[in-house]
Length: 332
Image (cartoon, rainbow, N blue to C red; front, side, top):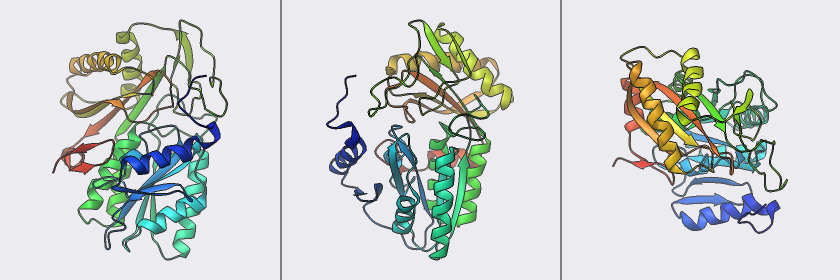
């Protein structure tokens, strides 16, 4: 294993030190391991926070900033942050209008965010939770009961953060986050497994010509192992799984994300995007907005994840609203 690390046990701590040095517009609490906007809480506005295990960068800390998250809580690699961390971040960003927790559907995340929300409520902070469970590949896995939360997390965080910036109340911000989740589906494919720094070995074994279909973002295996095929065939598999679960009618508008898992060149991701565009074009679906790149990764895994979100005028407007974070920046 070759990694750009000091001590694998300090990987998250060292990465947070680097983030603090690279982004003075952010404030890193190194004791509780969360990243927040350096400007502090905005009084009278709903705050939006998320978090989870590290190793999915830029998720979540890369999406902290105006128009998106107020804070992100970092657990160890592929391990949920503990309730004390989440509570500290919740308290730090609370401006009196409540706090929204965006939580990926993994057992540890769900339980720890729930406990933190209960503790915050005891402290007089209103909390609502949006559970992201967009992955259509498997219904249950080692990490979760029900569908996993994956690529749609970025869309939920963006829409909720944009609506919060307008001064909307807590229930409205939570409602739009849930609506985005309901309108989104994802499906991932791995060409290689990832290597957790502390373990030093791949999380599962793949033969030279094998791929894993329907993987999650924690290095867990998927629903099927098969020989690798051309990008067109793999795009068909991912798109078919999504569209079977969430049909998009002719004339629909969609946000399409072809997300790299951490170890795939941009060139290959654009090859996949071209095939997805062909598939959707044949169905009469318009790609209204798109992202191609690494947004929700699994350390050094090679592969990609397709996320489709059905857009309407409100969701399109929230997606287009200005955002300024380390990983997403557009608008005024």
